[in-house]
Each structure stands twice: as structure tokens, then as C-alpha cells.
Length: 569
Image (cartoon, rainbow, N blue to C red; front, side, top):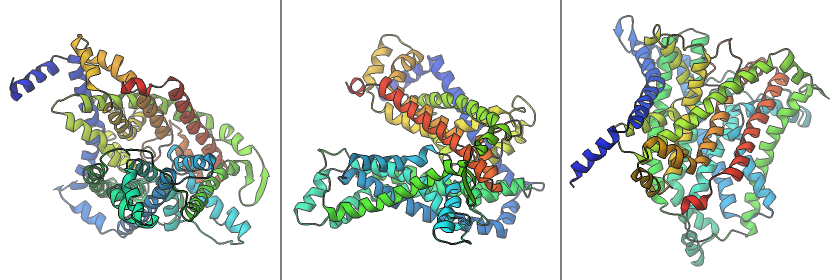
């Protein structure tokens, strides 16, 4: 049978499976409607005026002093955060993989600290920094006697974003360092090279593409971040906050659309370089897992300084998180430190906290299983099936990773409050809970898809092919064989989607209406007003919810997860 005949036969088999064809059509429609369409509308808004197609909106925006300042500020913060996050992430990963620590407890603390910001609300550290180092800060006012210290602005944003995003780098470097064959470094040591020489001449060149990869990922996260600059930025505007203010303050939707297109262009360029160049180069550099167990470093001249540095950072991060519940228990932060529960009481009695938690919980709970299932379906199609639209589905589903939340929010406003859906079947979508659920799904889809693709590539094709040979359809194979084998990834994606949804703010702050009260919007509102007691009370309860979800997921996977031995055999 020739190659063309084989392809023709595969196409006929594929078209004969109505479930598969329908699933692909629905996926394409969903991705086009809720990812490509809002972005296309932004582009249309930025180039079409009353006089027709014109670049006058871009000319006006590029000439605005506020825009020039915002984009300069954004790039400065992005570069610093990218460098600092990569350094700290590499430090923690190197200590975990290479250094023999005195106690397991210390290693556990480092791991927890490295993961804390991943499952916490994105703006918690901003609140903490203000409460510790602001004008009424515990450290600045009461320990150092400084009464006029301001944490707002460039350094405040940079510190908070670095602590928020370095875990992303840590997870990337941990995988890279574990994949380096120890024999390469030990050969250099046997020839008399010092630890520093080995690191600079062997380890660093091997992970150099990974460092570039980590830098670009955190750079994208930094310039797209909205919550932290909004709370701790002060008068130091970034592009994300300027876009928000352009809509809510200046009511300039066309100008906001043009700014959003500029921000989207920057993130897309960085995403393409990271995804299709550096990530591939990093994979090619590290061609396999370590051939044997690594001999951990016990030399005190190496272990002591690295342990001290990691410990100092860990203590600082823990201090930042500890001050949030205390901020909710003190009567007046910075002035009256008597313990009280009135802020928690006011959350539920005066500020409709029960409704905020109920709305956030229900919307996130609806979005999470849909996101997890869609992620697994997309992963299954990308890894296991061959069809013409496969590249489109993979690229568009991953595109949401590069789209800043504020940009997506502006796109949804222009796309579903106007655009081609002023009338018709989707005219009632804007302002409803459905559009918030859709945004949650779109924002979490890339993370779940990447996890699913990694899990599916570890499953031998013969397992599913035998089921097809026995007459099972694609739906039966997916639900009875594939999904049970990747249920760990499914559960992980489920909880990740829930946590990301309930802590989201940048994409939904422009879309939420008075009909819905969301926790993150409430925290942002009270933090901006300086009502730190209420903001901390909301944040404390939200942290308990998110950590509780992660612990529950770990418990379920530990006791009911897929056996790795079964999968490998």
C-alpha cells in the first residue's frame, strides 16, 4: 500500500467516526469564537475608524505621554523580573537537585516556599509588602523607625512579581537539572575542576537555553500582570493598568483596543520565541534522563552559602504570607495590634462576603471540570490523532497562554457587548455568569493541555489500538482506556483550573457586573481603598480554600491515582 493510499484510508476511517468529527467541529468553533474572535475584534477596533481603515488610532495612542511612560515602565519591570526570577528559581532548583541538606525538613520548607505563590491569589504579596514595609509597616515603622517609607512604584512591583513568578522558573530548572547526566560533571571534577568551574563550563552551557526559556516566560507573565501593579504600582503605571484605566476612566475603547494590540504583539513575539525556538533547543540539549543517581554536594564551602541564601529568601516569603492572617486579626494595622475578629465578621455581615464566596466558588466549580475535560480531549486529539485541523487546535488552545488577561477582557467587551453579537444568539452573553465561566476556561486551558500532552505521550499506542481492533469507537476508547490512564493529569488539571479561576482577576475585572460578587475583585477594591483588614480577611479565606483544594487533590491522587507501574507495563 502506498503512502497516499494509506493516508486516504486513515481519512476514511476518521470521517466514519461521527463522534470524533463532531468533537473536532465543536472544538474549532469554541476556540475560534472565544479566543480568535475577541482578538480579531481588538485588531479591527484599532484600525477602523469613522473614516474607514486607518492607523490614526495607533498614531494617537503612540503619541500619548501616558502610553509612552506605561510601555517604558512595563519593559523595565519585565526585564528585571525576568532576570531576578530566573536567578532565584535556578538557586532553589540547584539546591534541591545538587545539594545535600542537613535535614529533610529544610528541603521540605524550600519546596513549600517554591510552590506557595503558585496556588495563592496573585496580589497577596502586594498586600504583605505594603503592610510590612509601607508607611505603617511593621518592619519600617516599628523595627527601623522609618515613618515615610513608600513601597509603591517600580521596586514594589518588581519585588512582588519576582516572588510571585520565580516558582515557574524553579519548576522549569528542576526538570532541566535532573535530566543532566552526572557523569558529565563528575568527569570534569575528576580532572581537577572546582565546583564553580564545573558549573560555569558544564552545567550552565547545558541549561543556557532553559535560562532563556525561563526568562521569557516570566517576562511575559510580568508585562501581562494586572493585579500587582494595580495594588502596589501607585503612580507607576504599566501597560496592563493603563489599558484598564483607558476604558474605565477615559472611556476610550478604541484607544484601549490599540494599547491592547501593542501589548498582545509584545507577548506573542516573546511566546513564539519561547515556544518554538528556546523550548525546542532546550529539549535538544538535554537528550535524556540521568544514567545514574547523582552524588550530592556535601562540601561546606558550597552548601553553607547556598543554604543561607535560600533560607533567607524562604523566611522572607513565609513572613509575607504569615502577615496576611494577622492583618485580618489586628484592629488597625500599624496602629492598634489588639486581636479582633471584627474584620471576618464584617466580611460576611456588612460586605456580602457569603455571596462573594458563593459566586466565586460556583463559577469556578462549573469552569474547572469543563476545562479539565476539554484539556484532555485536546491533548488526546493532538497526540493520538491525525487530521488537518490538528495544528490549528493545538496552536489556538496554547495561544491563550500568551494573551494577557486585560487584553482578553477588552476583547470580550468589544466582541460580545458590541461587535457582530449586538443581536443574535449570543447577544445576552455579556454581563452573565456564562461569560465569566468561559473566560475561566480559556485562561486555564493551556496549562491543562500541556499537562495532558505530557501524560499521553507516555502511554503506549498499542493499548488503544487493541481496543480499536476489537471494534470500540473513539468515545469508548477515550472514556474507558485513555482517561483512566491519565486521571492523575485530569485531577491535577481540575484543581489547577479551579485554583486559577477562583484567584483570577485581570481578565474578569472588566467583565464582572454588580450581579456577581467575586472574591478577587473585592480584595482588589478594598486594597485600593486602604482597607487592609477587610482585604486580608477576604484573602485569608481565599488562601484556605485554594490550599485546601490542592491538599485534597494530593490526597486523592495519592490514594486513588493511577499506578505508574500499570501505565509503564
